[in-house]
Image: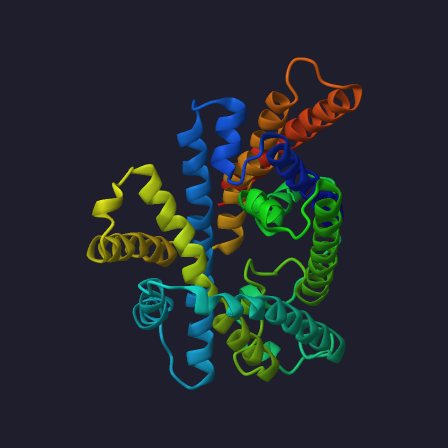
Length: 367
């Protein structure tokens, strides 16, 4: 499932770039307007605005859980909401109020290093048996019952329930709103070179996801939490290192994602440039961050957020919009190759929409 989704997402990613090349567009909204006209352009902007907003919501949820565990490791028992408020007021808000985020860009690289570190530590813990029920793993006594490894004989690989997992994968692979910019900024840009870069990136990501998914399931079985680090003991030093790593990288990546959300809001409300003063931008920043924080305090199931967001917003960005734009871009007299690609993109869209809808319905049924 992971590899198949990775290939499908890689294809739609390059299809957007190909359409951009055909229309000489450099933004998602621009390529939409060049192919579909101005009708629906606001909807496209809204979807591309809500997508980073959902990312920030997930980040806030992860930081709340992470810092709650870190405080517990340091001997301070706090609630999840208090941890969320502290990290928001003392960390997220000051960073989001910065006027120049260029200095934060290098910190996003730490996100990749953090993922690798987590995968390595998870692998070590799987093989050393410290969470093994049969061998009375040393950290089992620290876990809540809902986090204790649980295994059975049920195979849901080909049931409707697996579509929840597929919808989560939508969130893992989606970056398609940035495809036009990546295409424009690629050195010696052409579609062939772009396909090579995209293919390698998605294959690499797929392998990492397979690795972490397999290790997580083999360790905790059906009790894997949507945020896998929640499964690990607060007394586990390796898990603490992982929590520190991911907290640091997310904290400094947060304002970069938030900027996309805020800019999308400014575009949606059509705020005149002369009114985009520092004070007004700060007010909007605090307002938007307040909404995200309230939602993060209410929502505790990261997997559900990823599944619902992936099955709705990501489905539109990844499967629906690319097909519609490419179909218009090839015109009324496409070549045989273009007709085949239109047909394949249509098939991919139908399958993607079906998977997204069923995944969201099944997830809502499980809530």
